[in-house]
Length: 297
Image (cartoon, rainbow, N blue to C red; front, side):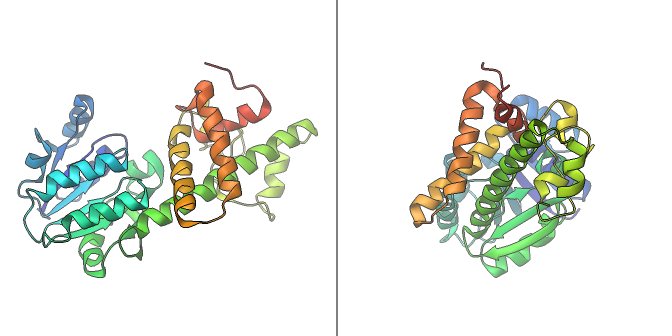
């Protein structure tokens, strides 16, 4: 065995991540409040614990993948009371930078190592073990954590000190939200002008309009067969999650005094899309709203 890992949060992302650690030879003890998530993880070799403390018992490394900053701070407070010195804690949730730094501080006097390591790559990347990890924390913590992260991801980037991973994730996803809205607007305009989807794709994908939202995640069916547009916008990355990240970007912009007018506009667009009842669809489905055909709840 490669070692023992506690894994808190076995949902759509955490479950397959924990399964990849099992496949890599680790003994993984997991905990989640949702019984169905525990059952799915158990079927993939994760040992299910009855509590956070039980999942952490005997673990050299503890990974958390939770919905929001308040959940991370609550769980890390529990962990701070029970983990021994020398334990490495890695949070892969996407949360605000302030909460990430507070989480690091909770363990600062415990002799533990801590990393914030949010991910990019969605549920497909979690299952395939091809995630990108954006990591914040001390150099010695990163050196200890990198081999573990490599079992769940393809690219591991040390972005700086405490909170730097979350900062990188927030900035990256603000770019993504803005670029997807722009690509969707371009296709809507092309439709009104009588230009085919394929023609616009063939030009823009090899010209200055090229971007990931176009070439890897095209919001119309056809040009990129793997994109959610070909599956009636079943999510890879739900619109509600994009809205969460855009809200985090705007909170960070306000706190830091950064000017992000396009990020603010993207947040408003995705907020409206969610209010219309489409938060569970892929974020590229916002093209339907821009066409004026998004149905109300």
